[in-house]
Length: 388
Image 1 (cartoon, one colour):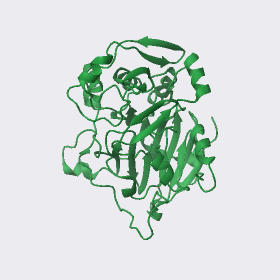
Image 2 (cartoon, one colour):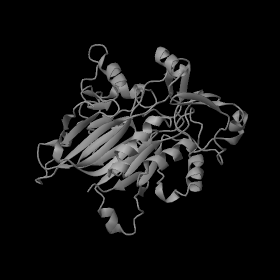
Image 3 (tube, one colour):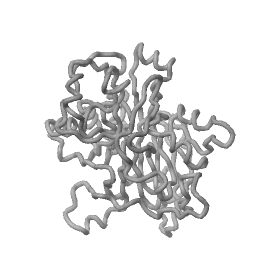
C-alpha cells in the first residue's frame, strides 16, 4: 500500500465546476430543494433533523452530491437527458431514459469529483467537455491516464489516481476557529465488472469494459497537521460498479471486524447487461441477489441503493426469461439461467442496459429480514446524517 498523499480544497472560493460558464453568469448558491429528506433511523422530531450536519443528494444513476462542512463532493457525474445516447464499448451503447434531478449547468460550486471508472454512463460526453480542467478528480489509474492525456487545452490537470487499498487525505479549508479541522480520507476499494478467466483476458485486449473502483469515504477531523490524529466521524462505503467478487470479502476484515463500523453503504445495483437487456449475455454489475449478499457481508448501519432500475415492462422481460446471463465471478465463469423477477408495472429506469429492477432488491431485502436497514431514495431526494 502506497503512503497516503493529500490535497487541499477550499469551498470558500465557490468556483463553478464548469469551464463554459457564460461571462457574468451567476453561480447557483445551492442545490434545488430536495423532494424528500430521509434519515436513519427515521426522524422522530424536528429537533433530530437539526442535528444533521451532512447530506447526500441523489441526482440519478450513480451521481450523488455529498455536502459537509462547506465541501461539495460529486460522484460519477452523469447529466445526460432522456433520449441521449452513450457509447459503452465496441458495439455496445445505451440510451438515457430519465432526466437528472438537476441540470449540469444549474450546479452550485463543486469542490471535488469522485469517479469510479471511465465509462460514459458515469462520466458522460457533455460532462467531459464542460468540466473545469483544474477541478480535482480522484479516480482509477485507468481513468487518470485517459483524463490527463488529451490534446492541448483539453487535459485535466488535477487528477489523482488511487488503486484498490490506496488512500489519500482531502484537507477541507474552513473558516471555523475550532481546533478540529475537517478532513476526508478516500480509500480505493476493490471492484470488478468482469472476474478472472478467459473473458477477463479477452476484455483486457479489447478494453470493452474499463477497470473500476469502489470507495471508502471517512469524514472526520484532525487537531494538528499530523494525519495520525485523524478521527473518523462517519464512514461511507460506495460499492462502485462491481459484481460480487471474492476481493470484497477483505472489506469487513479491515473495517467491520476491526472496530471500524461502516455507517452508510451506497450500493450500485441494476444488473447491468452487455450488450443490453434485449440480448442479456453478460452481467457486469450486481443484481438483487448479489446486492443482498454484499449487504450481509459488509453489515453497514444503513444501505442506500443507487444505479438501479425501478422496474421494467413485464411484456418485454418475458421474451428473455429463458436466455442465460453469464455472471463472471473471481476464478470462474458460470451460466445462471435465472433472470431477475418481473417488476410490477412500467416505470422509467435511468438507462436501458439495466435488467434487475429495484423491486427485485426490495423483495430480496424483505425476505432476508433486512428491510429496516435500507433507505430508498428517488431522484431529487436527499439523505441527511451526522458526522460526529
